[in-house]
Length: 224
Image (cartoon, rainbow, N blue to C red; front, side, top):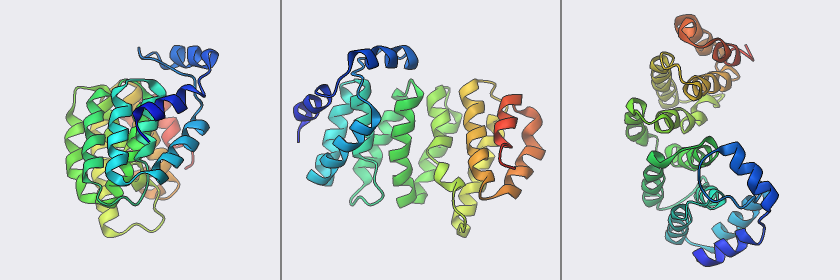
């Protein structure tokens, strides 16, 4: 499987009408093929099975560089798996994508891939922390999206709780950023956390909720 084969497979599933709708919705200027996510899932699953880790990283890099919407999503999906050895090259590649984020869908798929690499080596959280001070909206948002797995554990370890509190510290700074996508990211993190750790969520809202936008407070407290 090489880049030409991958692009041919994606183009074979292209839908011009869907592509036009996707371009209007995402608003980022790039080529859209109109390939639905379930189809990309099926294709990339086969590619992962056929390639070793270095080949997957190389394909993901090549797909990303095309700047085609579906190819960038496919690049992320090629690297979205729990077990990957070695995985440092994959982690470095995903990090290199972050400053290029310009719309939520590609960013979220890439963060999903990155979250697996964070879970594989939680010490990498130190490499994510500088994103929280970025002037780039999507980099700043990515710090919360990529750490979402730490909202979901029912039986977190001490290390997990330390990371959970660390990210909540980032979120406490984020509440003063009025941008919609930042407020939404804080609300998303808290909403997911509330299902597994309602006490921390309530404490955060008690301390910082007044600084949040009203819609973000409502969403954060949705399941409390």
